[in-house]
Amino acid sequence: MRFLFLGDMVGRAGRNAVFSALPGLVADYRLDFVVVNGENAAGGFGITEDIFNETLRAGADVVTTGNHVWDQREALEFCTREERFLRPLNYPKGAPGNGSGLFEAKNGARVLVANIMGRVFMSPDLDDPFACADHFVGSCPLGEQADAVIVDFHAEATSEKQAMAHFLDGRASVVVGTHTHVPTADHQILTGGTAFQSDAGMCGDYDSSLGMEKEEPLNRFVTKIPRGRFEAAQGPATICGLAVEISDRTGLAEKVSPVRIGPRLQEQRPDFW
Image (tube, one colour):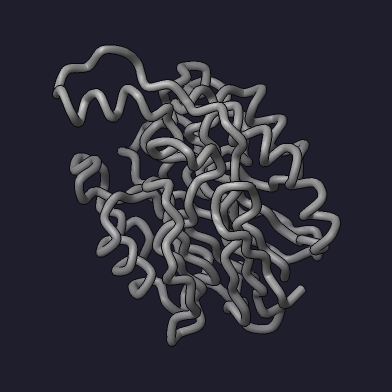
C-alpha cells in the first residue's frame, strides 16, 4: 500500500500549496491512502468545514487535528457528522466527534487511523495517550481487522513521540509526529516494522516563525509585550510529510521517505515509487 502523510497545513499559503500539489502526487505516485493534518488550516487556528471538504477533494482520505481542533467553533458541530474528520482520541469521554476510524483505501485495504495528543508541555488533563493507544490498537489489531494502522501523534516533546513509536512498534504501520511544524531528520523503520518520524513538519511558509509572520513572535521574545495577533505567513509555501510503502502481507512498513516540496527547504521525494 502506498501511503502519504502531510503535516500541519498552516493558513491560506499552506492549504493552497496542498490543494495545488496533492492531486498530482496522488496521480503520479498512484497513492492508495492519504492523511493530512488540518488543525492550523484556517488562518493558523483550527479548520472550517469548507476547508475540510476542499482537503478531501484535493485527495485526502482523512483529516487529523490536534490542540487547535476547536479554535473554529463550527468544528464542534461538523465533527459529529464527518467520519473522516478526526479530533484527538484521548479527549475525555463525551467529547464530540471521533478520534479514530476504519477506512477503505483505494486498493481495498482496511486502514485504521487514530489521532492522539501528547501531554508533556501540552495538555496534562487529557486521558493517558499510551493507555489510549494501547486500547486503540488492541481493539482492531493489525493483520486481523486492519490491514494498516496509522497514528498521528500530535505532541510537543520529541521524547514522548519517540516513546509512543516504540510503544506501538510492530502494532502500527506508521507513527508520525505533528505539532512542532519543523520536519525532523529521524525518519526510519523501527525494529518491529513501524515507520516513524518525530515530526512531519508543516505545510506552510517556512520564511516565518512556525508558519506565522515573524514580526509579532520576534516582538514578544524581545520586548515581552504582545502588540498584536499572530498572523499566518503568506509567502510561498513548502509542503512536508512522510511517504511509506506498507506491506500488503504484514501491514508493516517496507520503505519510508520524507516528502519536502517547495521553495524553502531542500526538496525530497520518495525514490521507491
